[in-house]
Length: 181
Picture (cartoon, rainbow, N blue to C red):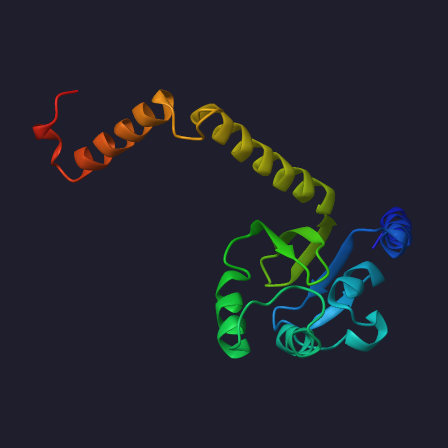
């Protein structure tokens, strides 16, 4: 390794130690080779104590503690099996996770040809909160636009939209020939 690359690697290590983004490297055998404390914090575990543990061991601990990533199942073995099918399924993939404490992370997974895996976790809680707020307001505006203000009964616009939806549904079921469009 040349001196310039070694210097760059050392500098990157400095940044990784202070980064608020979580970083972790798993071997091809799914053993955690290294991570920064930000990644360990997502799991609610200490970075010094989790190095050398398998993905399954880490997530069994997360499941047992009921902290960190939300695992909505009573069957941790089934969840781990499904998770193992997704990991390393592509050279690069993105997905979101939510934590028990309400935070959200965008996870990027980069796999090398030898099977090693780099995970990066970016906190997207603010974006998810904005997304949920936007969805709530969109739903409210849709209700306002389709309901008569005085009677609170669906208006003409809503009726026409419902008829269009039904016509499309019937067309999919090949029963539309009975309707005039």
